Image 1 (cartoon, rainbow, N blue to C red):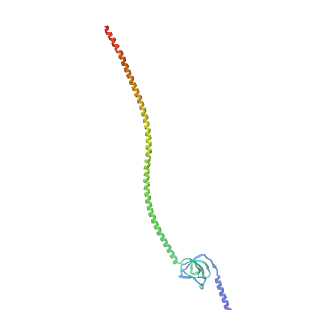
Image 2: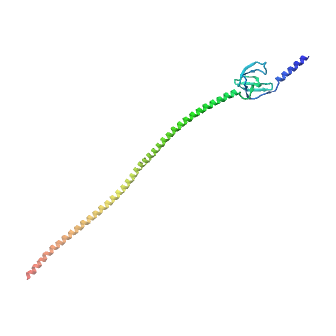
Image 3: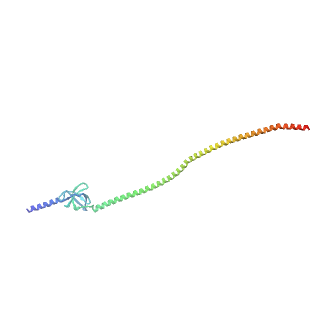
Length: 227
């Protein structure tokens, strides 16, 4: 009877352990700084070992109980129970150091790449500055050439204007020349008429003198003969 009571008490304690409150937690845990722990199919050493877990391994927490065991899942999808005391909220120091060294190496590599990019950008800037200077020189030369071409282009316009002005002056001079010719012709006609009139007058006077003188001489003889 006594052994029967002890068996019942042990059975109740085992049942209470198995029926202990279970908390579902979506979190990550890491295997603590131990060489190796085991993952089992249940909560206790009597359950079958599924996998050996090494220090620093990342585990996803599925269930966490008050019995000292936590149900986890590995990154490759294997689920099982491990002792809660072997789990840590953060990676172990060696893992942290390795990750820090990895980040440092990546930072150094990134820094190296940035330095190389900076050197390339500086070379590109020098090249662009040189090209800009050359373009500026070309722009200055082009501006001078454009100014010259504008002057050359303006020259025909100026010549055309001068030609129009000369043509107008030529027409004016031609008109004046026609007037001068007309005036000269008028003067010439007047001169000819004057000389004609003068000659005619001289001729008439000569004829009159020729008519008068003989009569004058005849009367003189008559006067002398009467004496």
